[in-house]
Every structure is written in structure tokens, then in C-alpha cells.
Length: 274
Image 1 (cartoon, rainbow, N blue to C red):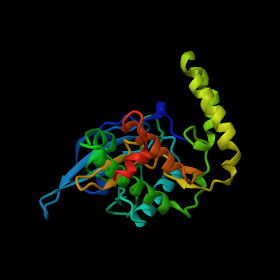
Image 2 (image 1 turned 90 degrees about the vertical axis):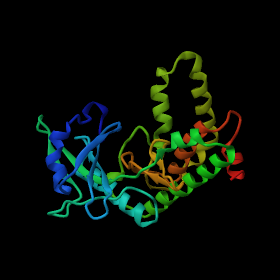
Image 3 (image 1 turned 180 degrees about the horizontal axis):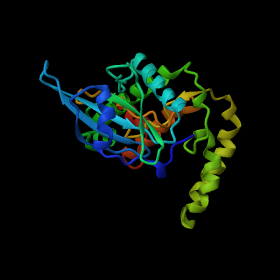
Image 4 (image 1 turned 45 degrees about the horizontal axis):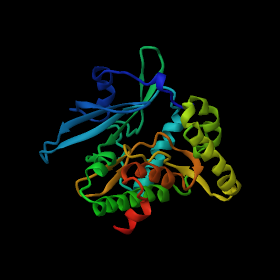
């Protein structure tokens, strides 16, 4: 079952602290992190050996997320990391070495919980806006492409039944979703959608059957990509994962990069300046 916005958990730190302690003692809440469907706690604890702080994201999944779907996210994360991608790493409980724990809500419903390493840096949206030149931004976009590509490559060959699901943000369903929701668009802008659908049906739809399909991250947007001080780019949040067009990650990523280029420019020009 897909998670929904209405069922997003709204727990306090006191309510989750007991479950957090299963992943290690001494964690304190630093702040809450944004999430559309889940609840993310950024927690920290001092490392007495190094003198540094361990920073961890404690994720409370939406109660509609099934164990199979959470398992798929964990497997995909581990495969991406094994393939060389910069992603969060799963932490395990200190006693039973489990990657997933359960927290029961006051309503009686259960939320699955995971602890993941924290990737420091700036969101791509912020880093792209702060780029001092077209050349700097082009170099950043090139690193974004390499990072997202490593995730897509790492997921090749992954098979899991939870990947086969209906989801509005699946590119395979774009025509149906646009047609269904076109009435929500103001009349003076509806011709933009109509023009897109006309081109889609004439140029793309006849060849879609030739595209490969595989399990993909499906949401490498400019707030799921974090730019480290070294310039490397990490990929966050596997919560939209599903089986779709293999090129989906590249297509979605490029669509978001278009928000950060000058009017009239194109991604190709930026890449040539890298």
C-alpha cells in the first residue's frame, strides 16, 4: 500500500526516543527534517573517542508503508552504496542487528522505523542558485549526473515484488495522470498541457514499448540531492522507488535541473562549458 499525506506520523521526540535507543544509547534530538509522507528526526550523540558527533536520521515511515516496501527501499539503498553511489547507510540495532524496528501509534497502527547515516551539505536547489558562474554550475550538474547515474546503475538487476505498484508519479502513467487532473489547471494555461499531450502521443507513445524497465529511485529532485563541501553529490530518499522506465532517474533529474538554468539556455550548453 502506498503511503498518504493524510496519514503522515506526527510523533514527538519523547515518543520515539525508546525506539531510537535500540540503535544506540546517548542520542539527542537536534532538529526535525522535512518529509512529505514520513517523519524524520535528525539526532546526534558525541563520540568519546574522536571527539566528534555522530549524526543520524531516524525515519518513522508512514503507517501505510508495508514491510515489503520498506525492505525494497533498504535493499535498493544498500545496492546503490555497493555500486559506488553516495547515499545514506543503514544502521542496525545494537542487540538484535535489525535494520527495521516497529513503533505503535496511539491509534494502534504500526509505523516501521529505520536509522540512517546523515549526509551533510547543501540541497542541490541551494547549491545551484549559489553557483558563481555558468562554468561552476555546469561542473555541478556534471557531478549530479554521475551521482544519479551510479544509483541507476546500482539498481540494475534488482528484483522485488514491492517494485510493481501503481503510483501517480510513475512516468509510465503520465498520460493518464495528466488527463485525469487537467481540469485542475486554469483554463488559460490548459493549452500547454494539451500541446504536450499531442506531442507525446505523436512522437513518444509509439516508441515507449522499446524502452527498458527496471526498478528506479524515481525522485532525484533538487531537494533529494545534497552537495557536500567536497563537491560530491549524495542521493537521498528512496521513498518513490518502483519499477518504471530505466531512464526515469535521468529524465526526472534533468527536468529539475532545468529550473536552475538561464532563460533560453539548455542543459547541453551547460554541459559543454564543464
